[in-house]
Image (cartoon, rainbow, N blue to C red; front, side):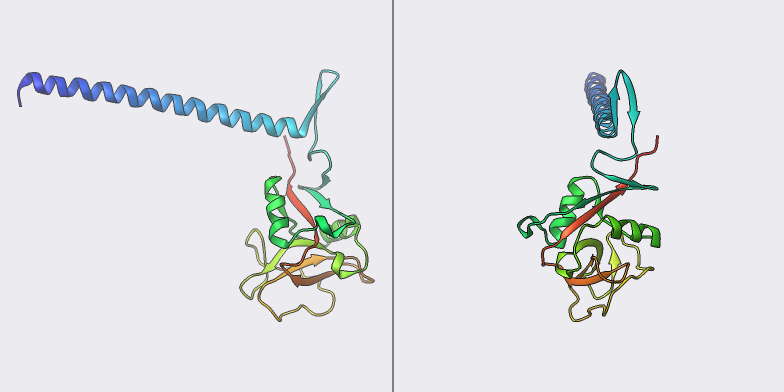
Length: 193
């Protein structure tokens, strides 16, 4: 290969390298802009400006704050708007949350008190607890260490989901077919800044 061909090839490679650097810088700027937009959306959701002062809350409007989590409970009188376990989980995820995971007795008591359901198990609220392959587990993959089952933990089918419902005894969980429709509760991390 002649010196002029090598020189031309080198120039082409340098130009392509510069173009790639320029594209990379543009992508980095775009990613930074998107990160700022996402951060601003979070700030806008949790912080409101009143009288030119910013006041941030741990949870968005309509959500209940408790320790490190925010909860929203979907209570509907009419069964037409109830959801299957999967539909409820999808709804929570669209809100940046997931179905509720109960970590301790205090959290169970709070959710039990906040659920406006009746003593009818068919009017319970979906929890983030299911048994898709024969073993109970929470939606985040953790094992079930606390159990607040009322009556028999139904083992007839591997496709079972858990619900919380008002009953004569506190801390009531019961099982239901995941395809049945229920009310639901979502949980996400509280904002701390």
